[in-house]
Length: 150
Image 1: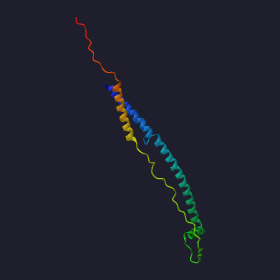
Image 2: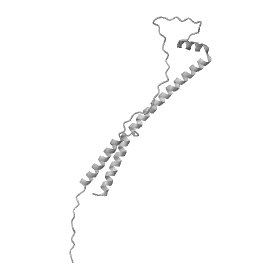
Image 3: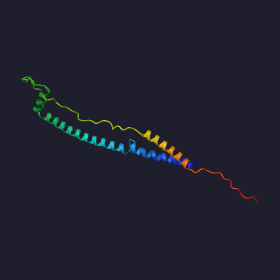
Image 4: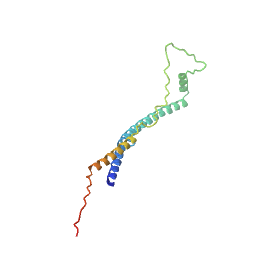
């Protein structure tokens, strides 16, 4: 057994760990793609929330400046002045008031962590490389070289 066999097996294990992490780890190419897609979804969500914010800001401005708009909004909520008469028609429903805070995306995308599997495969490939190097090595023969005596 040579030290070079151990070093070669260790190098094989390190290469397998690096390649495996590049392929399947959360910070690898697949993880980067998932995070990039999540970033795009978040940017789209921010644009939607900004549009909703602009709409709500305009509605607040309208309600702050126009008393008729406040009356209409109050009627939609079911409030009436004292001198108003309400006539309800059967089977006629008011349209529902939709108040939505917008779509909020939380968290990061789930990714299965396969680093332990990569480490196990690296260890097994290192052991396999070590055994292969031991089997390939030619057997050492001990021959004594005799010198002629004088």
